[in-house]
Image 1 (cartoon, helix red, strand yellow):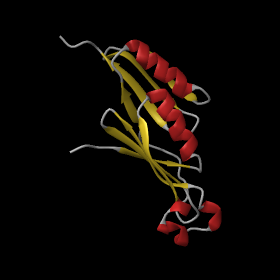
Image 2: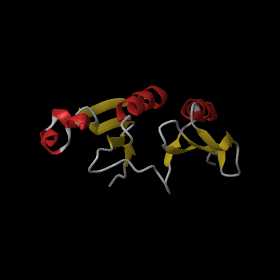
Image 3: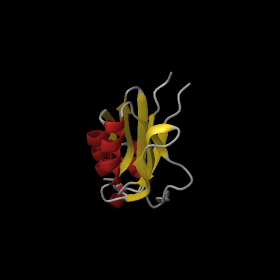
Image 4: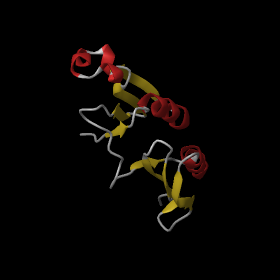
Length: 138
């Protein structure tokens, strides 16, 4: 069994996922608009260019998303974070800096009693992140 995260954006899924692919690596394997699917019959024409489904694959994990439309409007993320575990403190700091640009830092990245680096932020797209680099085992 695997758990994956599905995000909801306010019309900027394509932009967010292209950004995440650059910052996090991985590969966008799906990016379909409402207008390119049979769903176009059920959404107003002004929503046809919005993204019905996007999928970014990173090391066997999936980050997925959709844009809000009038019948299912965007609701900002609350009560959850996407957790990004990275192997090195340098990678943690680089990901944190890139995701924080234009966003809001809630806890600056730094060493903690449980991690070499840990920090929390909400990026410019409204996605809440926890960036973590575990302490060495042993």
